[in-house]
Image 1 (cartoon, one colour):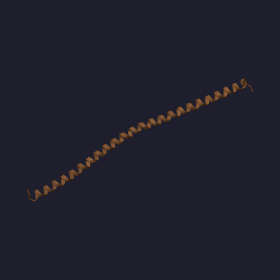
Image 2: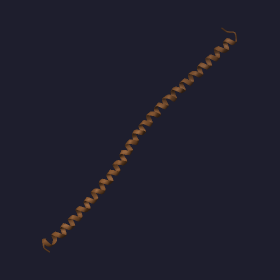
Image 3: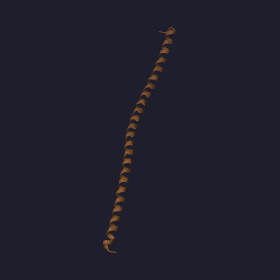
Length: 92
C-alpha cells in the first residue's frame, strides 16, 4: 500500500478519534457541571446548618438563663415563706 492509499484511512480514523475525544470531553464537562452544581448546593446548605447551629446555641443560652432564674425564684419563694412564717409566729 502506498501513502496515498493509507492517507484517507488514517484521516478518517484520526477524525473518528478526534470526534470520540471531543465527545468524551463534552460528557466530562457536563458531568463536572452536575457535580459542581451539587457541591454548590451542599455549600449553601452548610451555611444554613451553620445558622441553625448558631440559633441552637442561642436557644441553649436562653434555656440556661431561664433555669438559673427559676432556681433563684424558688430560693426567693422559700426565703419569703420563712419570713412570712416568722412574722405569723409573732416574730418581728
